[in-house]
Length: 203
Image 1: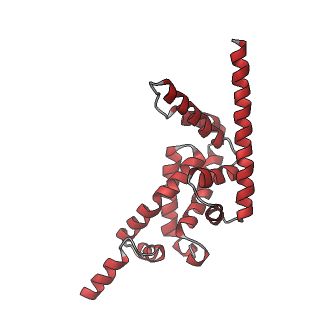
Image 2: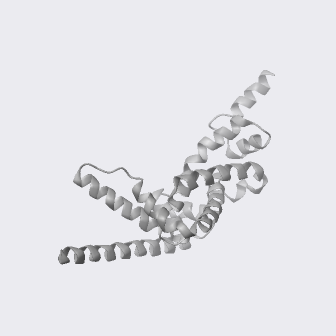
Image 3: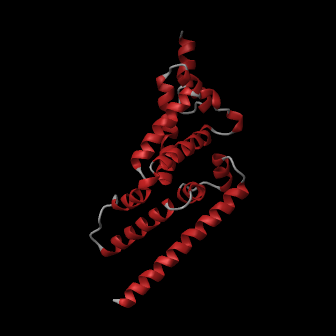
């Protein structure tokens, strides 16, 4: 009995592997599931939020991902990559379905992202937050395949190799998409800057 208890306690420690925790979760062990959830929920939620711009969609996607993890645990194969990479892949599919469903109001959602930031009382803070709003909206306007690499590499700080693993593509693909995404963002901000300069001259 004591030996079994020690093994069980060891299995549910923070050092337990994802594969072991997933196996225990599939057998109805709620503690194992909670450990997995706490370990990977943040990464899944942030990816969904960067991709959708909506906390509500990100929360819903996160719940769907972990439910799918339990229902289809046999689909995860440890030899092919980490569990977090697998979960990000599942989240990627769920986010794309969500975005297709809400596409008619996508522009309104993008503007809503900007309004979520609190108003600043100091001019410098206001300028910074206006720049952040503009960046958030610009990223959300990128095509999904470019938005994904920006979210993973520029916002989450992943390496090309880590992003490639999560997106199940080559490092070269990640590099070229990120280069294209940054060029698109830079071009947009150049256009916006020229527009602001023309508006300033016309006042």
